[in-house]
Image (cartoon, rainbow over all chains, first blue to last red; front, side, top):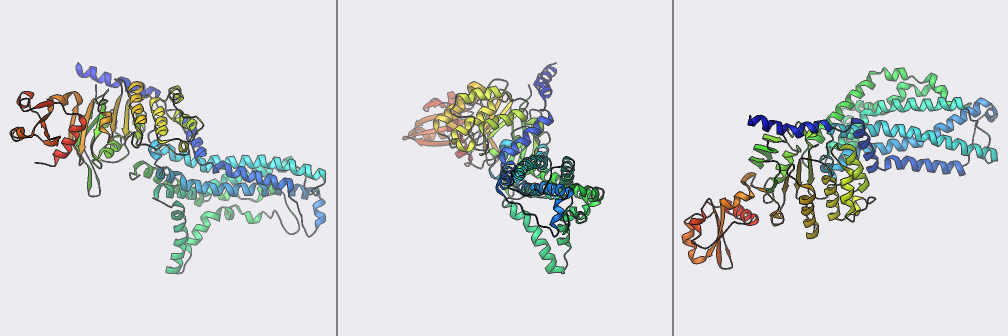
Length: 316
Length: 286
């Protein structure tokens, strides 16, 4: 009788705890992702600064178009093509900077919390290591890429307006024309490439994350050392360059598989709208490539190892 | 009611050193337990094991859960402050509240805000702009607002000045503690928590040297202060430690009755700090 009573008393608070259980998964994940942007402000500051600089260029920059047959610029199709290329050129610095800050973010995110011992604070809260690490991958592979895509879109609209006004005012030559259909096609190309790039580079991202979780110090050094030293050692020892080719493939292979070299957007004699790439780029080849999917499997494995390290490491 | 913490034969080695060497103890609900020991005694390792932050051999249940395999469920009902300054320096006060509110199902933001209003901490400040004492206040504010059943504190007031230390423990007692809750804390400053504790666990060289309720100490341990001339005769009753104080001798006995000792001199229950020193110093002797 007594034991029954004691058991019930023991169970009471526990079952009420189960009722309040965990916060909704989405709210927790949203909070975790926001926290990453609080800590790593360069994730959103750097693209914003680049956008501001580009806006400055649009306001005061000069434009020079040089073709062998300059008369072609006067055709409507060429002006539309130049318009889409401007869209593209605007987006490139944003994507490059974002890729750069994301790489450093991944190297830092699981290292900094051990360095400043704040990991004890994060671990005092009911958030699993799985979710914490997953949130960091969500930041790198979803939040920042989509954010940059959206920012590029806004920047492009802003620039279209600034440049348009300047053309009307006569301070720029009338070399481009707004075309809504081609603008949307350009955005579609960029969105598809963004998604493709995220999938292709996911193992690289996971590699950086793992280095961040594993090393005691100097994550940047430890991340780059094997990539540089490996190929050099292979060359010295065997005179071959398989590793170098492999690394190169894991970085640039996406462009080969997509067939970017077939797009011929800008040639000596003419320019084509970015949208024409839709018919050329081989997304099917990329998505059916076993290398892409193997890469994703490897990425998942590396993230899993990073989670285990964060969970069981005990030397902070 | 079941024990909050039930540890049996906890063992943990770092290389050749045994941080925990078969530690067993249990903590009942509604107690304030001091885990007291010299540097390197294994206190922090024991806390880490309880919090599921380190692996170990032996048996350990915390709130009926296994801290190794059920850590996420456990942390819903356990709070801990692992010494000072583990709050990230870039974090703003407002962000700290928002984050905990976003991930902790048992966090009441209003309580934390009310507590912070009584301090000099501003919502917009970053942790790096706060003094050490204020960081601890902030952490305390977060912990007070979490409806947890077990609070673990590892040297929570290390490096704080007297005012902050005093108000830390006052707040803990007045605003936090009730008979539903349990507090387990480690500290070097035994004197400071002396009146707070309901239970003590002395730990030395990875072993439990003493585990008792504070109210039991009086019947188990006696401190006898007597003139040096009497010392030789009193020694036959086998004190486990003695020291000289102002020309007199203080002897510490375990399990002797007041009737046996009273004749020699002045008898009283040793303070926890004195008993700790006696136990630690006396441990090395035959």
